[in-house]
Image (cartoon, rainbow, N blue to C red):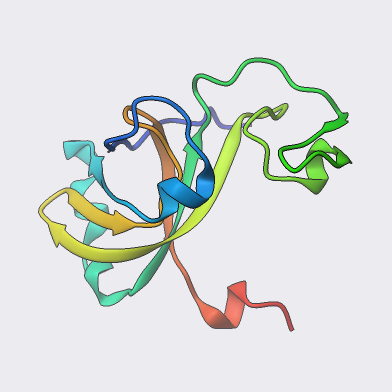
Length: 129
């Protein structure tokens, strides 16, 4: 298996976790490492992106536990940051590209979060049939 690498970092006003609803109302910036900048070619042709990132400060997990809204669920039946692989994914609106900086709205990741990958949101592939 290939080792997962960070391609950039999140720049956000949130220095610690807040409610996802609150975080998704705000803008943030994804700064791509310079060696991956060419991979952003034509990304601005997309209105929405899927951002895959690491819950780098999350520790441990429980397979079954009460979740944010009090209901007990399995870790794979919720969006908790406390996961066996500590991977998050969020669909964001791309507001602007400035070189290797992507200004987005809707990202529920804190300042300094490592970004693992970015993919364009595509209705044909991402909307259930």
